[in-house]
Image 1 (cartoon, one colour):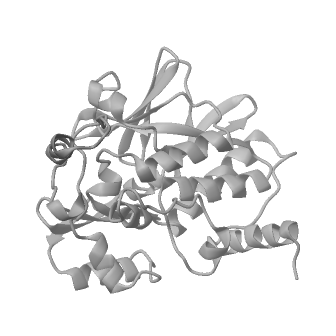
Image 2 (cartoon, one colour):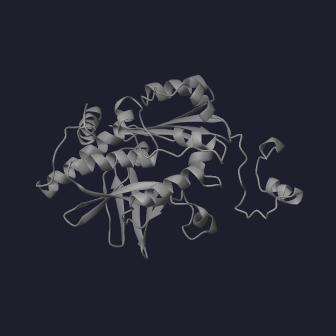
Image 3 (cartoon, helix red, strand yellow):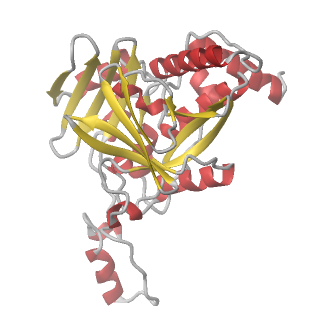
Amino acid sequence: MLSKSDRNEHLIKEYFRKISCNFLQVNDLSKEIKLDYLQKVYNCHMQSYPFHNFELRVASQSHPLFRQSLTLFNLGEFIDGYNGGFCFQSSEILYRALSKSGFEVYRSIAKVLNGLSPDSLEAKKIPATHLILIVTIENEKYLVDPTMGMNGSCSPFLIPENEHVYQQNNQHYKIEKVKEEYHFYRKIKENWSISFCSSFLPANQTTISTQLTKLGCYPLTLGIRDLISLVGIATPTGGKSLLWNPKTRLFIFKTICYLEGDKEQSFNDLGVAYELICNQFKIDHISKKEFKQFCEKNKWPQLKSSFFVDFPIDKNEIEKMKENFSNCENKYI
């Protein structure tokens, strides 16, 4: 029977085999070789490990008071065929792989904004529920975010002192420093849209666990957990994604191709969507029944705003609580 350290060593080697990337120790290698190898591991990871929010959908559709804790990552499950995961899981496995290869790397917490102004009241209410990596090579820091793969494979971003615009393939990005915080933008239809903000400072295990708990249990609505179902992965020629839109109740399958342009198709056939996640994204550990549940609106009530409960709970207090739920039925209270 393997010891814990031997098993971890074995799993890391199996991870590199699964993503079709040779394992290399970079400690004493040149800056150029380190950058080339970082790019290779990054690409192989993004093209092998799809992003999906299925575990978040399970949490969302569980009663808010009885949700199981989200898992940071189980490397053994990935090796055994549990393919893909959300940002914490994808970043965690890449963090372990890069650390094992000898890179100077740490994890950092970010807040997803999706176009919201960082100073807006709505943005300030949102917890920081995104995990990214920062790799240092000869005193230069690079941003590595493996969940960006659905927009196409990208290179690590050299973090600027103030502001810098990047063009990678046919995509445009920007990092801007505002006081002690960095804002990451993506250009969409000629307009800059902020994706997330972060201090880019190291996060310890306690902080990561706390933010992971918030991702699972935050009482107000989080789009990536409570509204949509999303799968995405990078490809050698771009990327592809499958989105379930709760407003239209349609699936949107999008392919990004650097040479031929983007293509998009909408449909409402669950069977077609399930075949796509199995064949296009190699996610076959999810049953069709489970996938159907991920593409349904939540049955549990969602809070409109945070509130205090005045004890003892009487009839008036219960009515106040009901009014604060967006889709409340008597059976849920």
